[in-house]
Image (tube, rainbow, N blue to C red):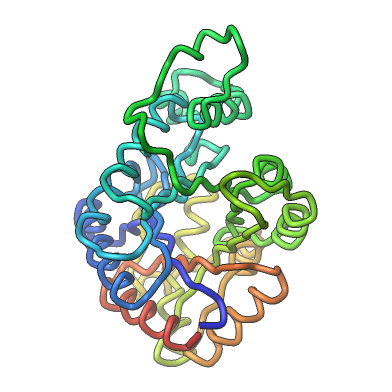
Amino acid sequence: MSVPLSVLDLSPVGAGVTPSQAIRESVELAKLADRLGYTRYWFAEHHNMASIATSSPEVLIAHVAAVTSRIRVGAGGIMVPNHTPLRIVEIFRTLEALYPGRIDLGLGRAPGTDPLTATALRRSDNPDVNHLLAEMFAFERGNFPDKHPYLKITPMPSDVQISSIWMLGSTLAGASIAAELGVPYAYAGHFTMTHAHAAISHYRKNFQPSAQLAKPYAMLAVTTICGATDEEAERLAAPIRVAIVNSRTGKRAPIPTIEEALRHEFKTGEQAILDDFFAGAVIGGPAKVAEGLRTFAREHDASELMLSTLVTDLDARKASLERSIATMR
């Protein structure tokens, strides 16, 4: 394969699909990705969103790792403002103990939700995210400074370490942190490509080797729908267009059906939202998708691509994954 492919799953909730059904379908999709040869399968963390059911990625990781055999399973990501650093380390060390060498911890600096829900999760309006990150790495690496009160705390299980920690981001801030810490970097191109080239270039230029990673490794997330034809892929993408506008304008609603989406009339100004989102999308038949994915990887110097397919029909999502990986071989 010219570039490794992975999957980012948000358990999309569509009209007529319950959130619990969306979660169960994600498990089925992960089993397929395992059989097809995808490198890793990540679950996002979002809260209070009617169109996305992945509120507890750590639970999904544990279950999917149990029903797959070789694919790496992880969080894309655990949103640091919503959690205490010690608990993050404890949870992912436990997962590492259960599934050695197969667990990825991706760390995000945003809450992945609206301000009110973020407060309900954390009980703090403005947590110092960089301080939380530093504390989490100090727990994991055992490098609190002398006389620090947490120096006496040992995260359990103490005989394992998290084998793969990633920094996520969509700006230079996340890229800078990943470079300084010497960890792999994942750029969230599935919702904006605005800073992708600059962020990945900055990460590679400023990377400092660490015990985890000797050389920089950058992954680029890309919204991808691979249909049997270009026309079919565009039809499958129609509901995503409505869902993205709803999400970014604060409207809570499941992802609509294709028929509902095709009837939708976008308001003035909403096209700019769509242009921003779909600048990071590859939508088409196998030939178009293959060309698009290779172009994204080449132009952004990506070591790996992670595909996000917000299609609610399970069979269509399965077919898209099958075609996408076949085109890259």
